[in-house]
Image 1 (tube, rainbow, N blue to C red):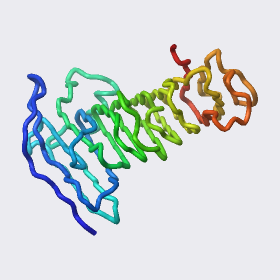
Image 2: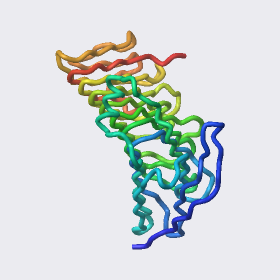
Image 3: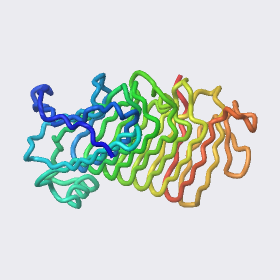
Image 4: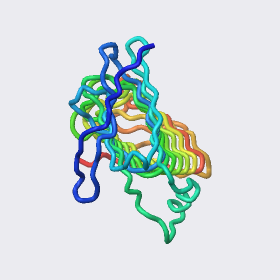
Amino acid sequence: MKAFVLVGIGGLLSLGAAAQIKKQFSIGASDDCKRVSLHLKAKTGNCFIRPSQNKELLDIYSNQEAEEYAHSLTQDVRGDVCFVKIAMDQANQKGVGQKISYQVFGGENRTVDSKIWKFYLSETKSYSLDLDYGLGNANIDLSGLAVDRLKIKTGTADVLLSYSAEPNKVKMDTFFVKVDMGSLQAKHINLANAQVVVAEVGFGNMLLDFSDKTEYPRQVEGSVGAGNLIILLPAHDVPVLIKLSDSWLCSIDLTRGLKKIGENTYANAAYSGNQKNAMVFDLDVSMGKITFRERSE
């Protein structure tokens, strides 16, 4: 088992007049490393993930002072895979129960979390990402990166995932997103080049955007407990088949372009039956709501 390089603190960036962003540390690349398995857990704060042209596997910046936060980091190389596990924590933070009550019920003492974490991933390596957010916000842009597997979980955090420019450089095996009580918007999912999309919603809200005219996933599996799931459908010429497992407590909002072709089964006009290139939705909902929307031309 080989360790790889951890580069020390240094460098300064500015973020307007609000705060100084300081480079906390970097994880340097290793010649033995061909692929990176990154597990990131952030309990609080505002987290950003962006691509970088640097060779380092991971650069981390923050507006926090060293004594204001704690982190745990494990890293090793097994074969040609670099395993990195990092957890960002906040010293002297409010109780989780108190913060959740603020988010759900509001309150006079509710404050905006000003803690910022910025993570930069190299465009020269392939990644498997496991991202876990507790409270706060996360903004993830994976444009131009090579991600072969993606897993995102949010507790009460609000997450925005998008591909703002370039598509994923490799085929993605599984695109997995899960919301407990927070919210997640996944925009331009087609640019992820995912074979399978899996979405789970507990009590929160999720939006899945398949509206781009690029390559789309063949299989979308989803489950909704008591939350809300909004699905933006692809262009009208993409064959779509929807299979639903629902209950009398749930709500399903279909577009006029979807017609019933069987028991709890719907399709659009482009679907003619057993098409290999069809986009198939297999969805389960108990007490929540699923809404389908047409692609806006």
